[in-house]
Image (tube, rainbow, N blue to C red; front, side, top):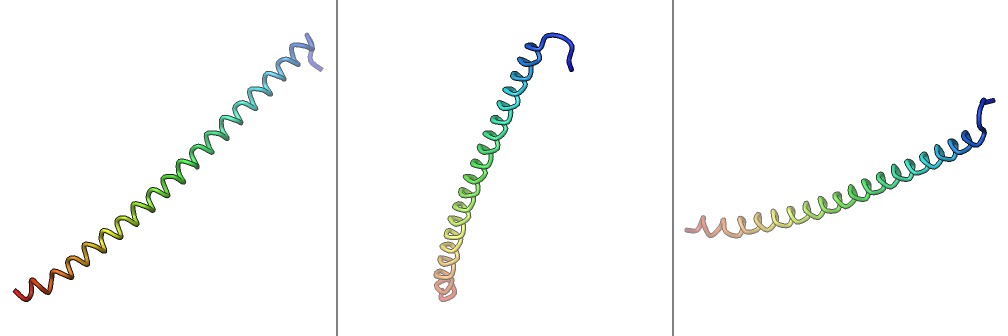
Length: 73
């Protein structure tokens, strides 16, 4: 099929296969790292939002507790 040295084409095929496997591995590992980082960011965002809700509820409670005293004065 190909004119020339058969060993050269075999080596070329092996090298091409190895490069393809390596690039696939790198792509998959980078996708896993990105999805892991995204899930960590989601957890952090959810925790921050919970803290924000608790703090807002505290401020609202303080305002409601102080309001009658201000009206009485």
